[in-house]
Length: 557
Ligand code: ATP
Ligand code: MG
Image 1 (tube, helix red, strand yellow):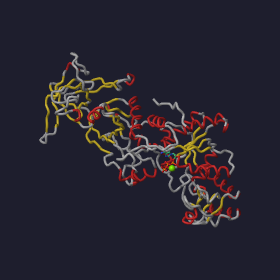
Image 2: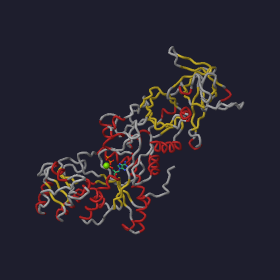
Image 3: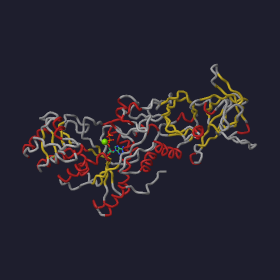
Image 4: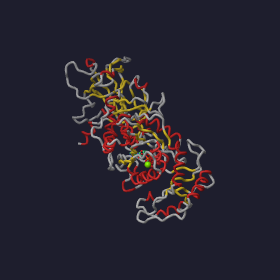
C-alpha cells in the first residue's frame, strides 16, 4: 500500500499559499525537465514524483519536457527510454514537449533582448571569456565587444544563424553585470554556434540556446507556475528571473529548489553512471546493480515501491544521504503483499527419501500466498529424490539450528516430516547427499500425534525441477560514501557486487515465469526472470532483494 503524505512539505505549503492568494488564478502547472543525455536514475524519480504529485493534488498538470538544447550530447534512445520510464513509474504526461519545439520563439526572444540593448554579440574566444569572467573572489571585467551597437549585434547574430561563422568565433551574451558576486550573472552566454545535427530539428539550426536561457523561457511559454528543481540551480535563479523580467514575459514561473536525493553505497549522477557503463565496470545502463530506473526495473523493483520511497523521504532544502536499507524495506513491503510464493533451491543438496516408493510422483497443494487466499494455490510434486539448501544442513548443529542435522527431524514445506539418517560424503569430505526417512502420516506437514517440529525448510522435486542460473547482487560500492576522501569512486567499487550461481533448482511452475512477475522464493528473498539475458533453455533469475534473515542475525549475536 502506498503511504500518503499526511504532513505536507515546504513546497506544498508554498503552493497552498499561492492558491489561497489566487496567484496564477489559482492554477498549478509543473514540469519534469530532463536533458535526454542519459537514462533516468532514482534521483530523478524524486523530482518526477514531486512534480506530478503536486500537479495532481492541486488539480493542475505536469508536463514532461525535454530540455534538448545541446545536440551533441542528446539522443533519441534516451528520449524513448525516459518517456517509457516516466510511464512505468505510473505517471501520464499526455504529449511530450521539447525545448527544441520552441527554437523559433527562443530565437525571437534573443533578438528581442538585443533590441532592448540587453544582449550583445561577443567575439572573445573561450579562453578569453573565461579570463574576463573573473573568479569567486575577483570581479570580472567587461568584454571589449560589450558596447557594440544594436544594429551591429542584430547583423552579427543573423549571420551567426545563417552559418557564416565557425564554432567559438562569436557568442551571444546577456548584458547584465560583470562585477556581480554571482558568476552566473556575469554576462552569461545565451546562444552559441554549434554545427551539429539535432535529433529533432536536424540541420535546421547551427546556433543553439544555452540551458539557462532555454529553461526559464520554456517554463514561461508553457505557463508553468512552479518550477521545481534541485539545489544546484539556486545560484541560477537570479538569471532565471532576470531573463523573464528583461523580456517581460506574461508568465513568470516561480523557481523553488529542493535537495537532491543521495543514497548510500551508490551514486546518483548521470555523468558518473556513464563512466561506470563506458569503462565496463557494469554491463550497460540497465545493469541491475545500477540505481538507474531501467536497471531497477530489470532487477524487479516495482513502481509502487519507488513512489512510496520518494514519499517517505519527503522533500526538504537540506542535503542528506539516505540509507539504502530504507529503499530495500519499501521494496520488501510491497513485494511481501504482491509476490506469489514459490520454492527454489540456490545451492542444492540432494536428499534420497528411504522407503518412499521408487518412481512415485505425488501432487501436493501449495499456497501462492500464506495470508492471501485470493491468490490461490498450485500443485507441487514430491518424489523419492528432492533437493534442499546446503545451508539447511549442519553436520554438527548447535541447539538453536532448527534445520537438518544427523538424527534431526524437519518439516518439508507442504510435504512431509523427514529425519536425517545418513550423510554421504565425497573423498574430500564434502557432504554430497543425505539419506532421510519420511513419516507417511505427516502428508501436508503435520504430525497426527502432535509432536513438535520447529523447523520448516524449502525444497524442490528432483525429477521435474528446472535448472537455472541466479544472479545475486550486493552493494555496488564498498563505502557508504563512494567518494569518501575525494578518491576516485571507481576504486571504491565492490568487487563482489555480482555473483552468479550456476546450478540452482527451481520448482516446475517457474518454467512459465515472465520478467514482469517478481516471486518470493520462500525463505530466500524475491526474484524475477532477467528480461535481457534469459532464454527458454537458459533461464536466469535476478535476486531483487533478500528476506530479512533471522538466522544471520542470531549468528551475529
Ligand atoms: P547530472 O547528474 O549529470 O548532473 P541530472 O540528473 O541533474 O544530471 P537532468 O536530466 O537535467 O540531469 O535532471 C532532470 C531533473 O531531475 C532536474 O530538474 C534535476 O533537478 C532533477 N534531478 C536530477 N537528479 C536528482 C536527484 N538526485 N534528486 C532529485 N532531483 C534530481
Ligand atoms: Mg544536472
